[in-house]
Amino acid sequence: MSDALSPARATVTGAPPAPPRLAIVGGGPAGLYAAEIARRAGVEVDLFDAKGSVGRKFLIAGKGGLNLTHSEPRPAFDARYGTRVAEVGRWLDRFDADALRAWAAGRGVDTFVGSSGRVFPLDRKAAPLLRGWVRQLREDGVRLHMHHRWQGWDESGALLFDTPGGRVAHATDATLLALGGGSWPQLGSDGAWQAILQARGVDVAPLLPANCGFDTGWSAHLAQRHAGAPLKPVVLHWTGGDGRTHSLQGECVLTATGIEGSAIYAASADLRDAIVRDGHALLHLDLAPGRDLARLQADLSKPRGRRSLGEHLRRAAGIGGAKAGLLFEVLDKAALQDPATVAAALKRLPLRLTAPRPVDEAISSAGGVRLEAMTGDLMLRALPGVFAAGEMLDWEASTGGYLLTACFASGAVAAEGALRWLGHGGAPARTAARLPLDAAR
Image (cartoon, rainbow, N blue to C red; front, side, top):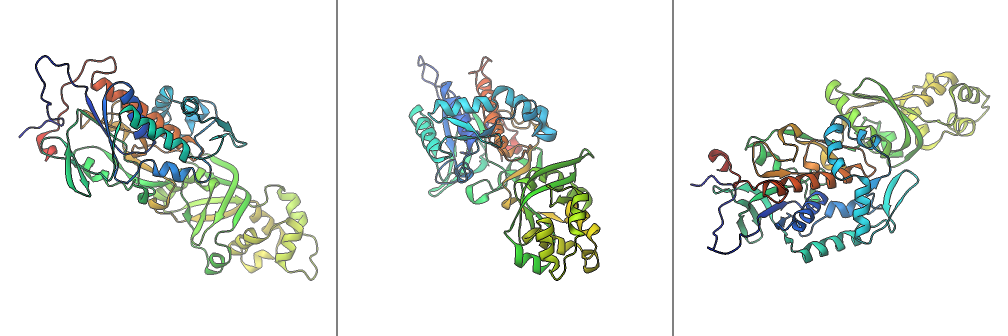
C-alpha cells in the first residue's frame, strides 16, 4: 500500500512534464483568492465545495452592504487581530487593505470609505463582484466542483469527497484547505473538518463564537417587552484580557435572552474569554453618554409632581423605552426613588453576562488550526503539502472589514506557499507529499 498523499502521475517519454496540481477545498474568499493566484502561476487548480455554489457567506455578508475592508492605517489595523497581531500582520505585509481595494478595482468595482472608516463597493453589493470573480476563474481554467463534501484521504493519499453520485477520490500534488470556521453552518462552514485533521495529528483549538451576542437572564417582562429594541447611543465599559478598562461608544440591541449588536461584537472576545475564565463577564453601560453624572443627578432631582417615574425619566433625562426597561430591571423599588442612585446606574449600569450565544449563531468563530501547528507558509507541520487558510485558522477580529481582509491575505500566503512547494515560487519542486501510513488509513 502506498503512503503517498499525491499518487504519482504517469509521464510520457519525451513529453513536457504536466503542470502540478493543486486541490483547494472550500469556496469562500480565502479559497477563491488562492485559486486565482495558483492558476495565474500556471498550476492546474481544482476547487471543491460542499454546497451548490461558492461564496455563500460572502453573499450574506453583502446583504447589508458589502464591507470589504477598513481604511484604518497600519499598525492600528493590525492591532484589531488581538493576540495574533504578529502573525496576521505578516499576512497583511503580503496583502493588505489597499491591496484588497486595488484587487476590487481591477474587477471594475470601485470602492469608497464610509463615515465609520469602513470600505464598501460603490453599489454596496456583493453579488456583482462575486459573479464576475467566478466567471473569470472559470475562464482562466479553474475547475469548480460543487456538492463535494470533503471526508479526508484514502489509503493512497487521494482526497475523498461525498457527492450526490457517491464517494469519489481526487489525486493531487498539494492541497489547500479553506473550509471556514463554525459560524453560519447552513452556508457550509460547519467545522466538520476538525475531527479529520485532529485524527492526523493537527493541533486544533476548539471553535468558539466570535462577534456574538450574550445571555444575561432577563426577566420575562423585559424579554417580552423589549426584545429587539435598540440601545443607542450607549458607551460600553469592560475589562479586557490585558487587565485594562476599555470603553466604546456604539449601538446595541436587546434580545429575548440578552444583548447583541455592533458594540457588543467589538468587545465579544474579551467578554467571552472572561466567561470561560470566571464563569461570567461584567459589562457596564452608560445609557446617557450626553450628560455627565452631576447634570444627570440634578435633572433627576427636580420635582416630578404627579408624573410617573417612567415619565419623569423621559422628560428630565431623556431616558425611555428599552433604556428605562434596563434601569427597572437592575434597580429595586427603593433604589429607583433615589435620584443619585438612578443617575449613577444610568452612567454605569452593570450587566452580568452568563454565556455567549452558540457558535452557529455568531458572525464568525475563534479557534481552529493553531498557527503554531503551521509553517510561515501556512502549511500544516503534521501534513507536508497540505496548506490551510481563512477562518479555519486560529485567529479572530471584530467586524468592520478586518475579517474579510485577513481571509484574503491568508489565502494569498497559503497559495504562494503551495506554489513554492510545487516548484512554482522560486523554490525547487518537492517530492510528493506523504502521509504516515497510519494517518492515511
